[in-house]
Amino acid sequence: MIPEPRLCQVDLSSGTMQGATGRYQKKLKDLAGLYADAAAFAARVAEAGEDIVYDVADFHPEGKTGDLIFGVTRMSPGLVGDEFFMTRGHIHGRADRPEIYFGQKGLGLMLLESPDGETRVLQVAPLSICYVPPFWIHRSINIGTEDLVMLFTYPADAGQDYGIIEKSHGMRHRVMRDGANGWRLVENPAYRSRSPETIAALLHSAA
Amino acid sequence: MIPEPRLCQVDLSSGTMQGATGRYQKKLKDLAGLYADAAAFAARVAEAGEDIVYDVADFHPEGKTGDLIFGVTRMSPGLVGDEFFMTRGHIHGRADRPEIYFGQKGLGLMLLESPDGETRVLQVAPLSICYVPPFWIHRSINIGTEDLVMLFTYPADAGQDYGIIEKSHGMRHRVMRDGANGWRLVENPAYRSRSPETIAALLHSAA
Image (cartoon, rainbow over all chains, first blue to last red; front, side):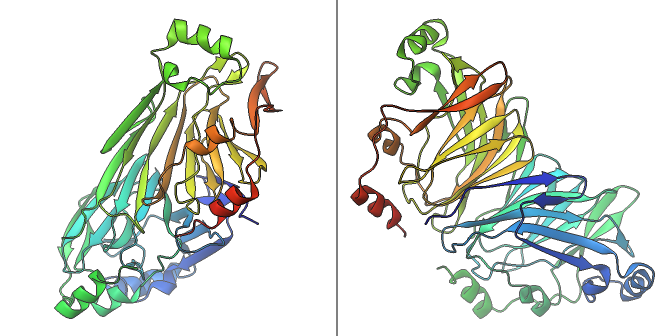
């Protein structure tokens, strides 16, 4: 028996996908420690901690190596102090695995960081394809005023390592509101660079 | 040095992608032998053989295993006799590699065939994601009246084997116009089933 073909339908208004096999949701209160302004976060959680700030609907194939996971993610717009709503961010457990995001609705940024601390920012709008190459830590940020909806796909054997960002005490840069409609990068003073040994281990994690 | 992140912009009116690294085009005259009605094909080529009936713009990463190729494909609407315009079709050179198509514009079908001759048909419309699992031969067909535009992605080490369809004298089924707006599957009388040895070899081509 070989796996059956599958059709999934994306719904942009809800930011979800008919035919998904998995789904997870993050509430604002789940994101303690993510934002620079702890007092602003506590105030936001007091008023809207149960709000679902992002969710993911995806399809996982039966196979692993060589197969692909795909799905759709929806992120609410919002601010914690002057910092835009964002995902926790991750590098792949197999760090040499890439990911592709395809913007469908809203306006976002992909914040990328290399193991040795280089930062890149790509703007994701409808019909833009964001290629996250192997070895880049990445986090999605909603800088718009409506839901940000993106499709994504990555190798089924990639896995996610969320701890890499915790270990460096956040990503090197934060994305803050700048004026009414703008954004700017701000250095994260708590950031700790990775050691040469950690970097070497990441770059040699190829399968 | 690790690969640089990349942003590509899809243009639905032209069915192409800014930031692509590769592109190829098929003219109608390149598709000899594909359609059931050879006389209708010759007549079509005489009048419009130089027309580009489908094209592909894609991005190939530097890496191979574990990385992803992605791009956009545009297919013209049209008929050869009663048979809708279609791609040549392929299975992956590494047959255990999947492919994902994401409908963006127009109306199409994905015609799928397993090594042992099972047929599946998925309808691809805007916002539908078509998952082609490992081991399925697949061909795109434009059953609409405008361009069919789809995004696609597949593992960078997948490769394409176009010969598999030639060896079986076409796919087992053809998609023909049925009435003004419909379609139907028609058995291809020239089709030759694959031998048990060929099927076994395909199913055991895993990397």
